[in-house]
Length: 135
Image (tube, rainbow, N blue to C red; front, side, top):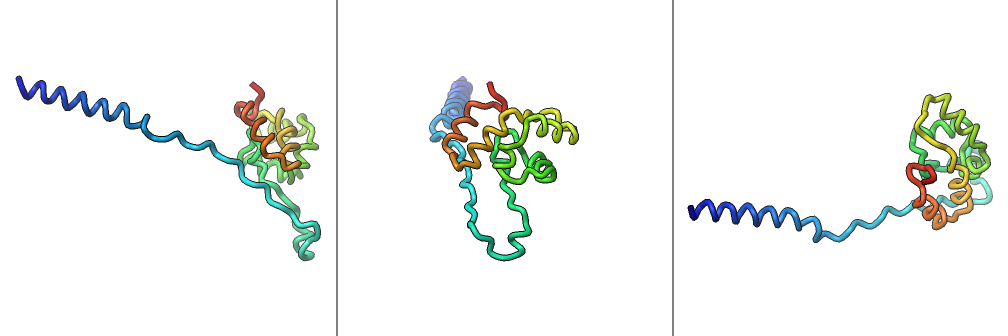
């Protein structure tokens, strides 16, 4: 009978340790947005002038690597290009690639903030979105 109570006590202690061990760890810091690359005013060479400048559009919430490639292929290379793009054109690009889940409604506004370099406002705006959509 003594072994039964000792075994039960050990099980309770192990359960309590397991239950409270996660609560003792400090919370993880939220991810930070990467800094936007800076561009020089004058091209370094003729080759640099010929190559189009491309921003990483995955900084925009709702755009992943696949949609980033689609936008670049459609001539949308920078945040400024995306900010100028019409939502119906973006939807047509997605429809042509049979990507029905993405919603480009907020992408131009997010791109406008990114093009202006206002990452703080971009982060605040993205925090109000869910999957790139207004909630």
